Image (cartoon, rainbow, N blue to C red; front, side, top):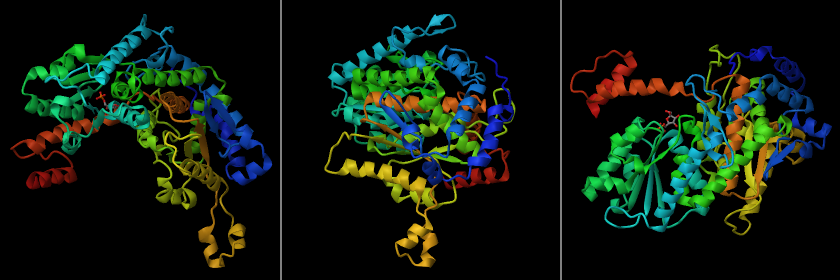
Length: 543
Ligand code: F6P
């Protein structure tokens, strides 16, 4: 695939957007709604029960036309095809990017290097299903003959954030007599607290690591083995209490896990795009194979939508293009993800890796320094909690923070008026952010003059509102795929490699070197800068 693109600044749509921004950049959402009262109905899109209202964005028909033109000039259509057909679009690692194959139905065929990958995907899913059924039913016994009651996933990054997020999101559907814990941090406290009330003879560890070499995961996995064997006192117990999820059979065997107990995936699945691969085994153990497959069907429905729908009605493309608009024209530095659904409490954290590890890049595919800003900082908390902490800054601070509100028509836990109250807050926040409150309105309420400026809400703060019926495995799959493809859209416009992550390497290398210095008896070599040298000295003296 050609990596040479017309530089972003030279694309006609980009130039047109620059000129257009001069016209509309300062326009208030109050004016935009007054000029076109129908925009609340017109600027919406829906697919598979996921409804997007993007009318409270600082855009006009012309903006949308130019953003769609930008997508076309940037080759988004061709690049979607390149991804879906297994071209090696992750050029710095010479890899295909085929997470869409993880949720392809059995009847589809996706050929990579002359081989259809779909049968292998389904073979792993079948193996996971068989295993999940045996553990959930109690047929799979631990070393002493007891059934498994506790499942501990050990992984980090994509091998942790997706599993934790999905477990929390789908807890309603989970088998409640199984306890799930997730250990990721190399801080020993994470492991110690996760197992402190568990019995080794009832505990199954899932060691989840694409590479099976990640320092944190391997350290935690070794501690888990020691913890298990301290109580089970027989190396043979590992076979009943440890399974591996990895692409690296050699390292799995070296660790002592029989590859019979390994669930594989492939180098064409990026860590942050892997929650629907075998990395999702904890999810399947929690919610069962049927629900897991419903989640995959949800992913797939959005895949088809992204691949086939014109950009002006294409939810992921629209979300991605709007983020480019704010990042590069309004200089917005962040995006707030605000789910009004307690079960989605880890969704913002999950999206942080998906978005920031993907698009936190400063070099284009052809190796040039980018000429515009790229991936913004994603952050957020579930509503309504955020309203009582950071929303003040979104409403009245000096920064522009585009927000994504996510809500549901129905709750999974009906309790008095709670759900209407929750949803009233979604609509109220989006309205307040967009339209604010003028000085005249504040004065008319009898506010003394000196207090008026403090109580004015400027408004003109953009947001998207995403709605669905209620949170199901299928809807979760749709939401994740929506953001995956929005990230892809952004990466295509910026012409960056959204699928590598070289930026995490330097810290890893330095940490390994410093670890030697912290633990060696001899004097450290003192070859760092003066700050790092003296921090090392201080730690050695005081540890
Ligand atoms: O360090 C970053 C990273 O490589 C992520 O991209 C990945 O999700 C995580 O580490 C864990 O990697 P692995 O699954 O190979 O242990």
